[in-house]
Length: 103
Image (cartoon, rainbow, N blue to C red; front, side):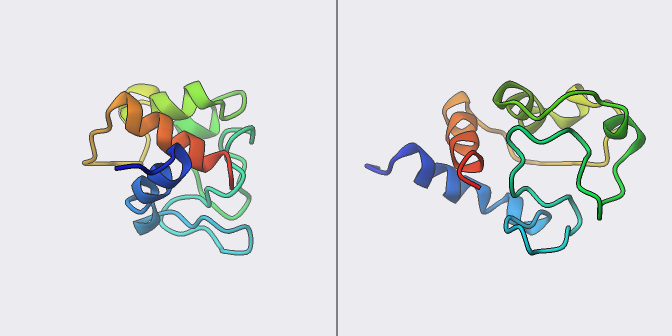
């Protein structure tokens, strides 16, 4: 209950690990590697075959874009192959992004 935001986010990211790798030396899994995602160009991990909709998405992964995508991938990028059954509160999304910023 007294965990800081980054630690709470790391716990939430446990759900992401079923499809995504988090370390720079790890190859992408079912989803692209998340290491360095904050500030990285969208759809730019070279060893991952992105959906057409994400490949056409311009810009970088900002905290706002990540929040929108994690909250509802299909709304952010209609036709994306990312699927999630998780529903995150605003606090959980903030914590997750705080953790992703450390990668």
